[in-house]
Image (cartoon, rainbow, N blue to C red; front, top):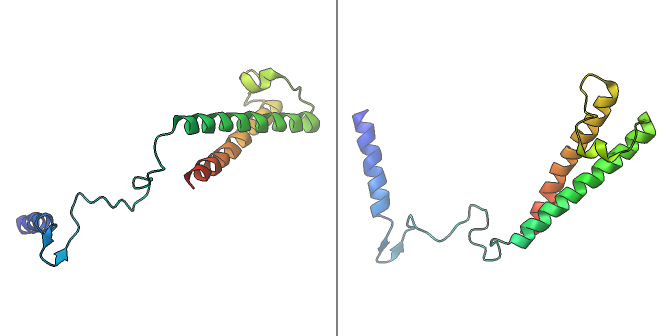
Length: 128
């Protein structure tokens, strides 16, 4: 084990020592400015933009409640449930032990899944 550890340490030291300019050959250093592994570090346009973040939050909330309203309208037609604001903003109608409760549970779950898909599209469309 001691031999392997010393080899690892010597290889690490050699790679750090060789990461300078030697005459004709240029080797990459540890402090390279080339960030090719994503997240927009090298992109000057990918800066912190609070207006963009706020617009994304507002659009996701708007789409979520719009989809939830449509799903509750479909539930009203198919299952004769009432359409009230309480169904959207309270947990009074979310009942695991009744069939109508599962209808509302399913609507919220479907709306959340569709919202996560919309999150991907909204977030990636701003990266272009």
